[in-house]
Image (tube, rainbow, N blue to C red; front, top):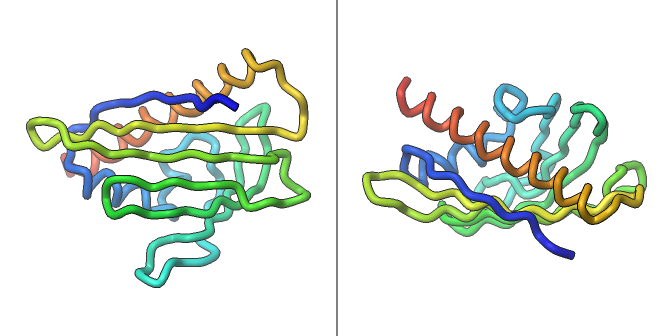
Length: 149
């Protein structure tokens, strides 16, 4: 299975970017297709561990849970929590944050999705690319608009 990888530079330090990534309650305001996001469990330090998503972005309508693994303000990865009701069989991904000159941050998004429905490899990669690019652009807008406020 190949991962889809893309990156973007955000005009804010890594701590500010990761604060937006970790604020799941806010996702429906900026993450395309996310209609409801609920933190189900947290880590001992209070960061979200298991997060339930309701997605309604044609043609995908699904509810699923992801388990998060935090590495400070530099990396967060996630994996799909198996659920018979979801149309997913796997969703593994990560945001990797690297400082860039001028107080900016390069955010690299890695994503791999498997569905119960078979999809041609080319179509699957194209769908992953759209998800990754949309997420990165939404994250950039959200972080930079908060920094200006």
